[in-house]
Image (cartoon, rainbow, N blue to C red):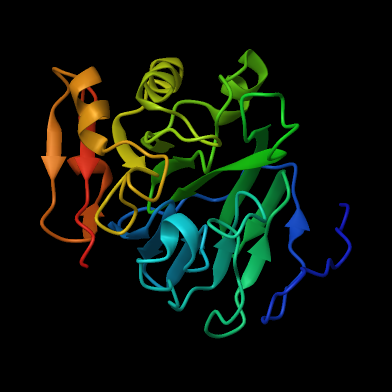
Length: 255
């Protein structure tokens, strides 16, 4: 079994702990619900039991300037790139473990897979690569596409599988899917539940950010049931996922 070198992370104010690269399947968690909290932009906290996984913490500047800094406790932090709107880990509470490279890892009894994708529409020449994260928590297959901007290849689709929950950017801009591109990714992956990310809000308004509102995505997905939560957090278990058709889950950021 190969162990990765301990890597430094520029500007990180937390201890980065080595995780072990795996080739075998991880053990699934069952019998509990999964709490998903939206912390703004592409940042989400996934909690089940004592497991807390934070994805894409950001620095409050640019399109994330008006969001609250996502300073929340977690045991594991996944980041899709080292851009400051999805890879700022300075000052996070505690000493969470950090993964920011593609590969297969184990965190406690969860297998986490990072899949390399492209972060722009010019083959990575402007913003480089993006890591999409796949793992199973509370018995639910999760795929967070981060800031994907390029179409999903056949090879990537095989690695990603069919997610129960897909988190996909929909607001466009220079380094993430616009509504049409997001729709194509959804059709390729055929998830049960879609959570849109990376779109214009009160905190990331179109006057200062090159993003469109989530409504443009919903119009394009006309006919797909939409679940609207009046909170930034939703609890999901395998029984609450759509059985046959797909649905869209919207969370409400508390400004």
